[in-house]
Image 1 (tube, rainbow, N blue to C red):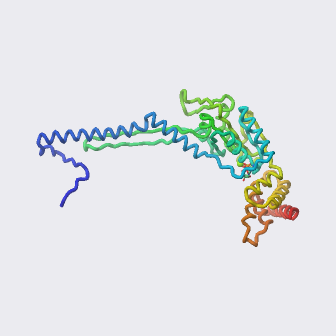
Image 2: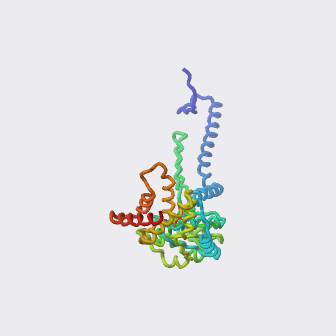
Length: 357
Ligand SMILES: Nc1ncnc2c1ncn2[C@@H]1O[C@H](COP(=O)(O)OP(=O)(O)OP(=O)(O)O)[C@@H](O)[C@H]1O
Ligand SMILES: [Mg+2]
């Protein structure tokens, strides 16, 4: 039988059997190994703490956040004169140094417009969606990526060496990124966030200072970059879960009311998104607008409903038992609260479909 040495083996008292020369050689090589193992520990400790590593990880985490908060792509954007007019007003106020607040009913095109204008400004765009659970930390960032590393070195049986290392890294979230580097911030549906979490915006918009409450000393205050711009959107129709933004915040924003687009623009959007013919798009938009006029604010179908019906129509081939009327009914029924409500909507849809047949 042959033993293959896979790792150096130490035997207690082995030195007794060695010559003085062998002892010198083995203690020298042991000292060398110990130095190597120490070095290994040191490298593992020092490397993450060095300024270069911090810088690299800062850059890395910035990219990570940018990727995570990447704004949605605007596809098939339609730019009629009325869309351009609103865009121009938004750009004017942004250039004048004010954040723009786009207000409008559900599905009228606020998010698409905000995204399109932000892209046109030519600066990187960061994006956040307001909701009940958003906190100030979600906006500014915080100490995260806590990593605990424990090194237990028992290389020599009777020497126990132990090191606990805690690495903490500050990670910027969209608001800090935008303020520090002059990006455009889109804060979609910001009124869904609890007002207390949005308080951080007050000094950003008024004094041009971002205060990072969990930092200390000089790092606590960030001067807002001159290229920083913000577009906020909110729904004009009250619904459950919305928080009324504090007056002080609204006071610092320029409000642009974006209503549903005109018939022509809606028809163009519907056709461009779905590939239905112009006539089909016009019929769909006529039906939707007729129903919109008759329903209460909270139930009005927006441009999204036109696109949905048109997509349904494009997919209709082969479903002979489903007709245009049924498609409209299904899309309009989304906000139905009771069978009676559904019956009333059926009547509305029937009337509108036969009017624009
Ligand atoms: N100018 C436009 N060009 C092309 N498509 C548009 C345009 N405006 C709106 N749309 C389309 O209309 C639909 C609704 O638009 P959008 O999501 O921007 O509305 P919204 O007001 O943000 O809606 P919500 O209140 O539900 O958030 C989307 O499918 C969008 O792609
Ligand atoms: Mg939206």
